[in-house]
Structure formats: C-alpha cells, structure tokens
Image (cartoon, rainbow, N blue to C red; front, side, top):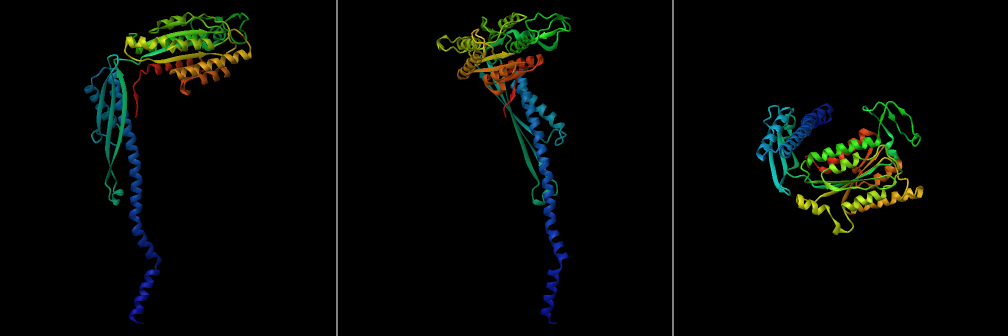
Amino acid sequence: MTKKTGKRSLISRIMGDRGGNFGLMTAFALPVILAAGGVAMDLTNMVLTRAELQDAADSAALAASSALSNDKKTVAQAKEIAENFFKTQMATSQIDSDGSAATAAIDIEETPIAGGGKAFKVNVATSYTVQFNPLTRLLGQTSSVVAASSTSESATGSKNALSMFLVLDRSGSMSFVTDEIDTVNSSCQNFTEDNWGKNPKWSSPCYIRKIQALKTAVAGFVKVLDTVDPTKQYVRTGAISYNDQTQAETKLAWGTKGILNYVNALPNPTSGGTDSHTAFAQALEKLAPTDTSKETEIPAHAKKSGLTPVKYILFMTDGENTSYDQWTNDAMANKSDTDTLASCTAARKAGVRVYTVAFMAPKRGQTLLKSCATTTEDYYEAKNMAGLIAAFEEIGKSAASAMSRLTQ
C-alpha cells in the first residue's frame, strides 16, 4: 500500500465515522441552543418587567392627577407625590426591590381654563435596564432597556358645564312592586300586573314600588351632581314626566333642587297608560330649540361661567308605549315609538347626548330605549331597584366627568 493510498484510507475513515460527525455538530450547535434558551428566559423577564413598569407609571400618574384636582396640591407637590408613589410601587416589585434602579421622569402641564380653573396633564416616563443571563450573552448582548409611559388628565377650579333634562315614566305600571322589601311599612297594597285595578288587600311584607325606587335613584343622581357643583354654577337641570299624557315640566334651572322636588311630588300610586313621544320632544325643544333664537342654555352658561354646556337627556321607562295622544291601540302605540325615535335622531343631530334606562321593562320598551340611546354605552337595563339606582348614579358621574382618567 502506498502512502497516497494510506492517506485516502484515513480520510475515508474519518468521513465515514458518524459518531465523530455527531460530536462535531453538537460542538457547533450547543452554544446556539443554550443561547436560544437564554433568550427565551430573558424575553419573558422583559415582558414581566414592562408590565410592572407600566403599573407603576399608571399609578404615579393617577396619584398626581388626583392630588392636583381633588387635594389642590401644587405642581411641585404633585411631582413629589408621583415620585414617592412610583418608588413605593417599584419597591414591592420583583425587579427593583430597593426602589433605586428604575427611574421615572415626571412632567406636569398646567393650562388655565374658563371659569378660573386649571387643567392638568401628567406624563410619567420610566425605564429599566434588564441584565441578560450568561446564556444570552453568548450572542454578544449583555442587556436591554425596557421603557413604559403613562398620561393622566384632570382639572380643578371649574367643572364641565352641563344642561340635562330628565324624561320620566309615571304610568300605572310604576306602581308595581320591585323585589325590594319596604323596611319602613310593615304592610301595604302590593300592586302587580295581575291585580292592577282590582284594589288588592293590604298584605305583608310590603314591597317597594317602582315609583319609590325612581325617587331614590333620582336622589342619588342629584347627590352626584351636587358633589361636583356645590355652588350651582355649572349644572342646570329640568324634568318632565309622562303616562298616556304629558305632565307639565319643571323648567331648566341652576342646580338640582327643582328636579328633586318635582320627582318627589310624583304621585304614588301612579296611573295611566304610556306615551313618550310628546314628553321627549318637549325636553329636546327646551335644550336645543328648533328656532335658535330661543336658545337659553348657551347664553345662561356663558353669563355664569363662560363655558359652553354639554346637553343631555335622561330618558327612562318601565314599560312600552300603549297609546298616542290618548288614542289607545297597537297602531297608535307603534306611532308613539316612531315619533319618539324621530326625536332621538333629532337629538343626535343637535348634539344632545341621550342616556336611556329600561327599568324592568318588557322587550319592546327595551328595544325602543336601545335605539334611542346615543351609543350602546348610554343604554342601561335595570332589572331591579339596585340596578336602577346604580344606573342613575353612573349616568350622573358620566355626565359630570368628575373623575380623573388615564388617556394613554
């Protein structure tokens, strides 16, 4: 055998040794596999880190906004509160136990608004350097910066100006009982759909009637508006009620005393059928008159606070339309629905936001109110007294825009 042949034989044996090939492949691939595992662990860590940074930034921004609008703190004091809040939040996190590694840049913009108030915009930006584990460092990267930011807005000294008209059902079915026991009266006439008009005997326990629930809900609603406008400079309210006829309204006036007295004076028990079209149309005409020369709300607010009001209608029913201008049949009931919806459309065009509340109402009543509400979020379906109270309170808060909010 020649030397040349021997060399070929050696090379052939090496090339044919599969165990050696596997060893070489493993030697090349192992660092890559280990690095990939390290990257997976570090990516998970980065996601968790950003979530904790975002929570801390959100909390700091809201704390500063609240301090500025509710506690009347200065900008410098609000910044200090936000910084302390951020550090405290991070100290309880897994990534920054001593509260020193993560930093936050806090910027507060202050802008004067009409009525002598101030608007605030709080920006919180934060970052943290995540150190990679030794496996990831095999790829040549040692760390990465994770960032988060949050913005919150609030105002003080002036509230959103608003004018609101309540359109309330006081038909006979508002005498029907809810599922809430009356703890004041031990017995009473518990009216239901089955015994309505039959003068039922007094029985115990006594259940709260729908009309009583409405009065309680309006009282809660009024409390919300009074809280944000204690001096009666920014809120004007009015109310109108209806059964198969439209009752005289209480005119739009500063504050909420007028509507509270109006609602508390609604009869108990109630009576009559249901026809909402005239009441809704009259409320809309008071807020946004067809003849703009008769506009009252914009001039009234301009004179009082210098603000342009947002206009609202709160439309509530517990039933479905049964008549039209005291003509009672299915065709007339449908006409009342049609005309009411036409007024709802007109309200949208006039920029009047419509909230609707279907209180233990049947399907057709629910359908009408869903279609009438300005947005799906403005429709409330209250299945009991607690739901009605909650709906009115939430509408009050929404209309007043009393709470600070995150905007980013």
